[in-house]
Length: 264
Image 1: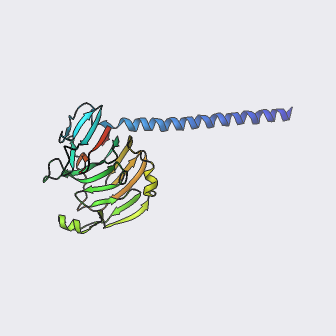
Image 2: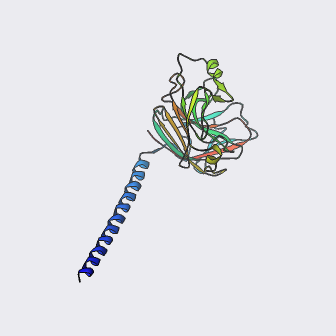
Image 3: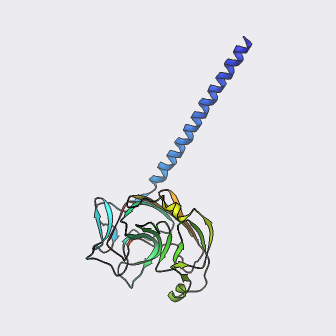
């Protein structure tokens, strides 16, 4: 009888432990799901999917089609300079931006942020850019349009070295080699560029997520961190600025964006 009681008690204890473990696991999963829902609720749509209200750009190249923000170059509308459509909602500093993009095979585009108008050219921006291209050679990297050029290739964690004094455009160009900024340190790796490329869908929809806080600039594609820049250059870096998306000089192309939403 004693042995039977011991067996019964051990079995009951085991069932209790399993039940408690399952409850705790379910509770942890529920908390995580709730956190995701609450975080997503903090994002606000910045594109209505119906028209270009709230955006300023050349309608020769930008339109709304099937709920998408579309940038298109045709054989009859080839560009001489890159053209942007610019969000008119302010100059965000610290923010997160989420959305989706799809780009044609020969397309070249990008999402500019903390940027300023390049007044010498209509509808042009200069500043940080989350690079996007149809061949996925550059998608995910950090490129500074009309500035220091490549700040981090896909797969790189970099630290941009401080500069002193005001730098002229010519002085900036002197520190650029092979379309990349030379005054930086590669401090870590997120993986090989070709390996990360396999995480990007060619000629299909991809999710992007930009996490821009202080001087740290992180670009995610489909949930994968593609580049991570810490910009210690207060002379050339910017803490806030305009947001816009680009169509790039080149052959006929199409790029589409949707579900654009921001958390500031």
